[in-house]
Length: 253
Length: 73
Ligand SMILES: Cc1ncc(C[n+]2csc(CCOP(=O)(O)OP(=O)(O)O)c2C)c(N)n1
Ligand code: SF4
Ligand code: SF4
Ligand code: SF4
Ligand SMILES: [Mg+2]
Image (cartoon, rainbow over all chains, first blue to last red; front, side):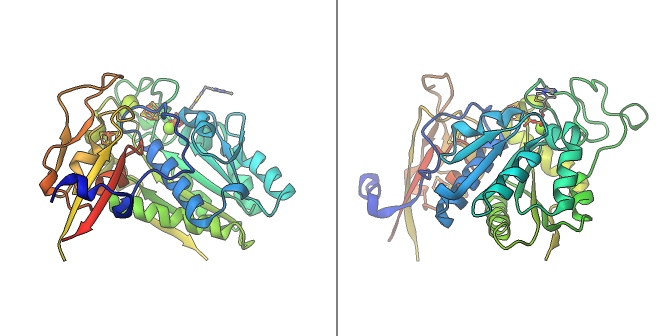
């Protein structure tokens, strides 16, 4: 069959959602951030909540998330997205409010903010991109960096004696009474993308049901920081991150 | 039922990361030897007859570069 007979509007089965603007993402080739942006945009489109959604962008590579999703945004000081989300949701309870935060932002400088927002059970969604490194600033160790992992500040690999242990912050958050849904997902293949999309949709729905905080970790790659090409980075993540950060729901009530 | 697919690549948006290529079940796609305006080896449908329109490639693409079409045959 001639390809031009297939490429017709009536045969289209998948394409870029209009919630994503036409701006070219500034992320490195193959970076997980782009996939997660797309998933959030598709969930917003499918739920029909474009004019009711407010995102809070972090400090980190995704600081410019507001350039890509055509919704309302605020940009928080480093680690303070959950505080801004708290205020936004309390003032505008009919809006869907979510934060989008990296592991440096959420699990390092912003630890207190995220813990207390989750413990208060704020009716917000927290999307946590764990790529085990500070991507934006040049690949320094994050609290989530694995033992033995080489980064700009652990050139011989992370050592527990010197650098402490990798922080499973999602497991800590699952213990807090205020959270209703805590899950860990990934985006390296189509099945994983579909599961993450389901999780993010459920989190958005929860936020309108006054059930408490929904927290979705996405185990991600930072191929530039890790210094491995994109396809190998996904493989490295499966082999090294998944055993320590196992995927699946930790809490759903 | 068999399907025949086709993809359209917005080649100037493509960053040549290759994560789509390894997720294609039929080896229909590959990175091109040519480069786009940014210097990236953009994605190309090299074996159009193999494409089944499953949208795996588009689903994993971080840059929303690929549009997928499918017909029943
Ligand atoms: C108050 C303050 N401290 C430190 C920095 C430097 N800084 C910018 S981004 C960042 C960490 C980013 O890492 P992460 O949150 O994991 O995001 P990624 O880039 O990996 O997605 C740091 C420490 C800053 N901008 N502001
Ligand atoms: S530095 Fe890492 S996290 Fe940042 S855009 Fe590049 S790959 Fe993504
Ligand atoms: S995944 Fe997207 S950006 Fe990467 S090579 Fe394929 S089409 Fe290009
Ligand atoms: S639609 Fe499916 S078969 Fe066609 S190129 Fe993409 S992944 Fe391969
Ligand atoms: Mg990070």
